[in-house]
Amino acid sequence: MPVEVVGVKDVLAGLSFIDQDMRQRIRTVIDPLMRGVATKAKGFVLSDNAILSGWAKPTSSNVSYRPFPKYNRETVLGGIGYNPGENKTLKNGFKVSNYVYNVSRPGSIYEVAGRLNPQGRAPFEMRASQGASGQYTKRSAKSKAFEEYKSNNPFASQQFIAALEPVTSPTKIPGVRGGGRKTKGRLIYKAWSQDSLKVYEAILKAIDNTAVEFNRKTEIKAKRAA
Image 1 (cartoon, helix red, strand yellow):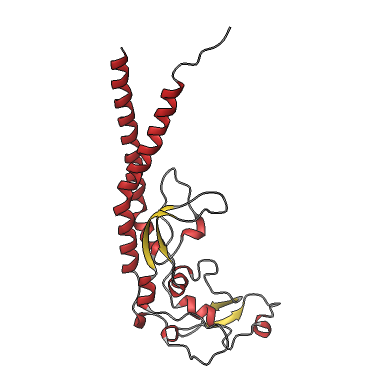
Image 2 (image 1 turned 180 degrees about the vertical axis):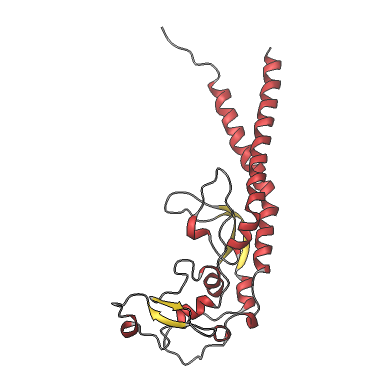
């Protein structure tokens, strides 16, 4: 005996409505909030006089190597913005939409420097001693860091990180998995940490409104059919 499936088209139409309506509602509510994150991030950009003095000095044009990108406030500000569209497809097949970006080289360095190695790249550590500065020492007695490190200043990385403010950790939101170290920073990640709860609440409200609208339309259709 054949089985007749009734209402498949209605179910598919309903799923399509939910997808399109929810997508539009979410984008509408988060657009001004994400623009606010970008604006707030720009407010965290320091002046040229507020960072380590040597980082803002211009590089000589006679160097034969790719120099470390110099800090310039206007360059960093120009590299921060908001994109209401989608980015390129990631390796996992997903895309990010309605995102804030920080793309300048000095801005990216200021954003994340030290979040992997809070004491800098070299295997040194600062130990307290009399006075304000303390002293540098090897972390391990077997370390060959002093002999193998090729920089003119083997402590440059540590000194550079020490001169920056600590990276800001993301705000913990119930039911939302954290991004770990990769969501710590000083500009857009700092702004996101302060505003992320508002964004998530707006998304949940948009989802609820989609459900209410779907139920309303479905109820009207059912009454007409009756």
